[in-house]
Length: 183
Image 1: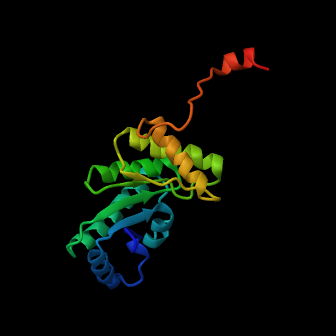
Image 2: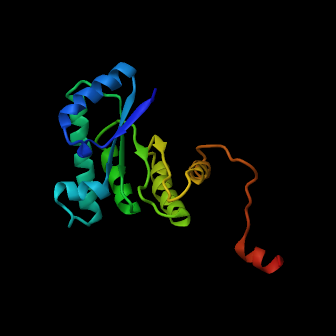
Image 3: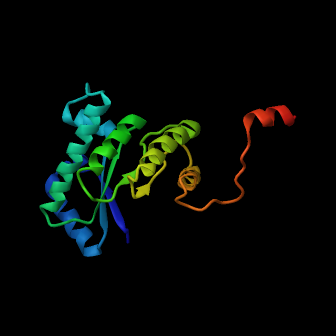
């Protein structure tokens, strides 16, 4: 009954099982989201020492394209791609890199973004920055804790960019005036 499936092919112990997944996805007309994240890709590739943003982002792009080819050689093209890192610069570099090399829809997010305040900042900059550049099709705000605040933050990011209507009034306040005129 799922409309889509999220997998990281690099986590599959038996890649031949991909044929079963493709057959089921095709039968059920379900899209597949290929997810690659920085936290799992370095150890898997024996590259724990790759720490520079450009190198890690390019590695993420290369692995994602490798996984895309696995699906395309099986005649499956209903794909969405996700390249998440826990830091904003790597996340943005990876999405910018993949956006120039494929036309598949991109699912934006910053993985392991942390507790509320930290994840709000990381998501607003990372997701919001990419959307402002015209990159991305769907989003997911990730934060430690209950999932409901993730939705509110995502909606706020979309609203700030004019991609969704505002809910309720917008309060515009000048910090100096507020400090000087209000107790």
